[in-house]
Length: 449
Image (cartoon, rainbow, N blue to C red):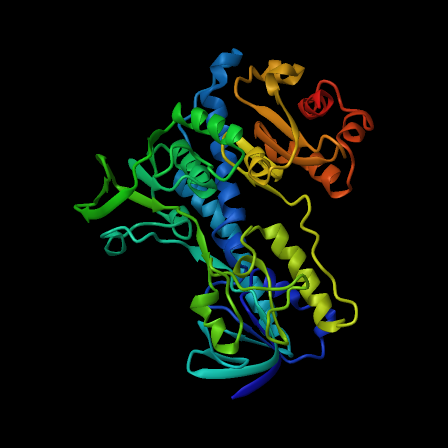
């Protein structure tokens, strides 16, 4: 049984815990897949490398209303797949090679299973450590639909590496993963059907954004809403998705995109006394400590936001806190933004109007359309808007929700305002907004408050 000073389970953000402070520590890294975690290999980065060209295709398709004639044959799929993964795969391999080259680091390419107090089984071996960082992330959730497990369905972990886009693609789910990948495969030439048990897409977002997004997507995709799948079969290269109270859907490929679940239970963290909440997330305090001394957790295994930028912030805090028990850091989650890189984009920060209503908290809100700006006129935009929500007494921003062109960029200035406690008046009248940039939609929305 090998003993280490530190065991890190997972090589997404967990890989970066090893700062120069650990140069004299004997460290074990456990990774059952490729280095870099979900973001690098199966999530944020490859998906955006597909989404950007897909958005170019969609812009070409809709350019006629601007007096522009563009012909597009869509994505050259094999070429695109090769370009994306020829760039990403060497990064993952290089990260692993680098860690293996360090004298004080041992890499275990195996599943990890916690079997006792600070004991981790890796393959046929058990290792121990005084300090353990749980950074094993999350995995695609597979719903308990009859027959589904017996079919060759895809998740976000596999769909981007298929050899050719299918003639017909069915997607079960209506969250950001489903919507982003629907955008990609539509641009690649697939006839895409989105099957969602809810009556709207992006249901967790502000209702006004969710409604508008669903309206826009209904013009482009086959939306089969409000009927939950009950059974899935696969025969002769075709999936059949049966639904409660509705006709079955058939397609050559099926993508299951119904969310992600943390890997804490799969890892067996309870065997060392680490506790999970009802949703399966490792419970940590404000300093990222679990209930077991010397065991820390970060990223998707413990944070339901499941965002790379929060995981990176948590990684920095954990790396510091392990070495500075008398100067523990916390992560400031105020103003944590998120984005959906679909077409249209969505950028969001803070609370939704529905959350504030549920809390009984007073608020004021205004929704400003892109079409009210000069740049919106230039775009002939008919769906984008910026919604801002503020406290009527303090005048502090409570939430901002943007849908439309470059929403992920436009929301960032509002993130800064929330993070540094600027009033909506300060944000509206303090800086000069470039005219006639699209950012004027943010200025106008704030002024209306």
